[in-house]
Length: 421
View 1 (tube, rainbow, N blue to C red):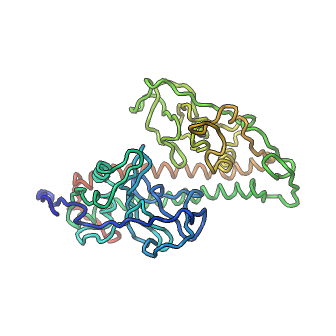
View 2: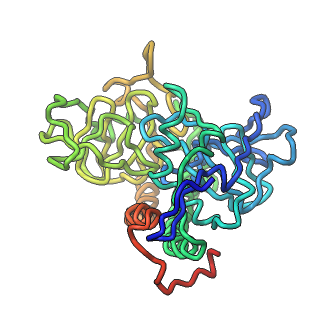
View 3: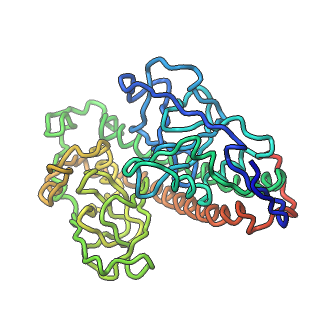
């Protein structure tokens, strides 16, 4: 139903329900979940806060059981998150396109959008759904205190302002290249990260390193290792700073002081997002330190992207012999499954003693140095790419609400919409 016409912009107000339909996903059976398989089960955890899909590496869910064919997704399908467990930064209502046919599965926590009005450009719709204007309406009508739920009917009730089709296409043509660049840089990051991990596993897990021929393996606390290699406590080969939380009166969100992280709340995939600051220096992690969660989830890691103050939920780790890249790869391998150490009746936690006692592998010095020399430039490239992605995301997030609301008028701009129409 059209509620009113904004004649000065020639934009109309609709209920989303008059423009599209939403189909619930399938309740896939847990007994058929697997760590690998022919089909990847998409969950709300695969959706980025700003829209689009993200992938979780070794933590993906695959499916090896039977299911109705209609829940096997096709390239170009548009999905929306219907259930959200994050609470801190809700992804409820986040949408994403499927970019591959016959691989991704549509589960019950997601809705698939179909039967879209001919007056609505699907690329514009994607950005509209990911705007705060729409997302706040979806979150506002959601139910549940811990786990938040929405439904097709609640989404249908959302009011949206829609410009003429040609304007929609121009808006999408401005925003989509930014997302394409973000996706391209994210893909490059993944390739570089996988290369660093692959070489680490080849050399220091499978022991197929340069010159490994005829290398004798011997027993150790970590299993069979090459003769001459050692196992040492982490505290012997690195400096470990256990976090300590300052009084809350020193916290702020206006950038006064240094970034402050209490735990993993604002951890990203690789670097933390700095939102809270502390006006006094207490326990500090320097740029490049490994940030290690000492409370559930124990073992989750990020790399400090600046000098930061760390609270009691984190430890900062720095190699004593300038082999920070090697140490990060080794700890990432050791703690690829979280909460494998620690104790506690409510949640896992580790002490200073626990941290210092973690056994790590010490290979031949020249081999570790060779790995460090090869992979350090890779880490540098990854850092630059993450910065580029951050800038692009900030640009997109600044433009999106202004374009979606009509605050920036593109109706008279000469914009090629051929690639997104």
